[in-house]
Amino acid sequence: VKRGFIFAFDQDINAINYSKEKLSKIGSNFLLIKSNFLYMKEELAKQNISLVDGIVFDLGVSSPQLDTKERGFSYHFDSRLDMRMDLDNPISAYEVVNNYSESDLFRIISTYGEEKHAKSIARNIVKARNIKPIETTLELVDVIKKSMPYKDTINKHPAKKTFQAIRIEVNHELDILETSLKNALSLLNVGGRMVVITFHSLKDRIVKQVFKEVSSV
Image: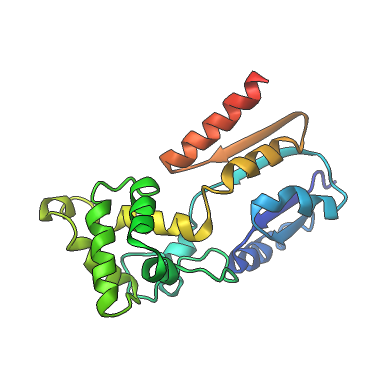
């Protein structure tokens, strides 16, 4: 006897297609919805669902996104700057890197990436793009490497924090998190559970703050 039903959300159509193929082999009691989890409540309402027993958020980037060089997430492969989880998103990493002001680049890289060399990286991005647009991941890596002392490029990849910051900006990962979590909590049945998997200190901070607010009510 089949018990329960899964509603799964992802804004990446490739993830939707892959999950459908895998899940179809073991059952049919699921629905995959191409949408950001920000719209979970509205999408469930379309299915006449107002309450659920459990919710899991996975806030990490998927391996296929990082490993598929054409997606432009990785600083290990040369590809056009992209980093969009939702391929329908009109803003990619290319637009952020080439169109954002130096002050906005600094804000993003320092806040979302917690990168101590954010000022020089932002300044050098603007200098480089004034000569020609920064089009590929490795072009951006080269600018980042030149923006920090050699000693800070030895033990860890120098572009890691900056790429993370740009990815978060492109996909509005922090902008929507607090609202998404609060919406999700309002969907839980009495006795329901919500689990959040996060790998980023800023996201972790937001999650803890939301749960603290809810538990104090």
